[in-house]
Amino acid sequence: MRLSELRDLKDSRVALRTILDVIDERIRLIQEKCLPLVIQHGVRPLPEDLLRHIFELGHGHGSFGGPQFTLSISQVCRRFRSVALTTPGLWATLNNILLRNQLEMFISRSGMVNLKLHLCIPECESESPCSAATFLKVTTKQSHRWSHFSYIGGCLDDNREFDDGEDDDDEIQYGYTHPAFSDYYDLRLPRLTHLTWHKVDYFHTSDNLDLPVPFGNWCMPNLVSFDGLDTLINVQMVGSGLNAY
Image (tube, rainbow, N blue to C red; front, side):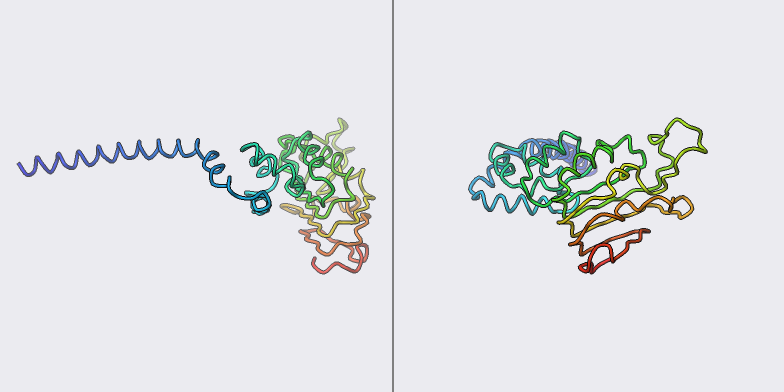
């Protein structure tokens, strides 16, 4: 009798756990759907200045911040959108995961604040929402507002996007110098304070050192920080303010 009761209790426990697991999953799904409403209810009493400050903190929070954060909060509700649209700094970070029309929208909404640019070239550039050429074409129109510029890219010679249709012997070997920069060797960047240039998975035999350094003739009188990976910089060309490289 006792053994039978024990088995029944254990079976009941298993059944209850199964039911609880189903309920927990249902709760999780409902919570996800209700999250925007919960956020709205929780922040409704907050004044707009404080809400704006919270948004700015979230925007600068590592991998959770940046353009995707801005796009997300601007779509939560009308109040969030209103605050986001009146906070230029939320729209001042530009990268090539944005489409061209999104880049132009961010620049338009950023007012006249300084811009932070991040150009990262994936292994297959055709998979990027915005090519390096398009990114530079759009953003260089506002180059006088750049305060940060970051470039991260690997060797380009296996990228067939730059195949000119000639024999391999006649092809330019770009190495780690992206050809999109060839039209922008003489940029004037009066506000630029931080420059990052990383050559990823670097092999010196794959690099073409005969090509100009893309930023070699950029005018950066206020540069104070240079972060280079397998990249050299002539300190004299950027003025006396450089203190980190």
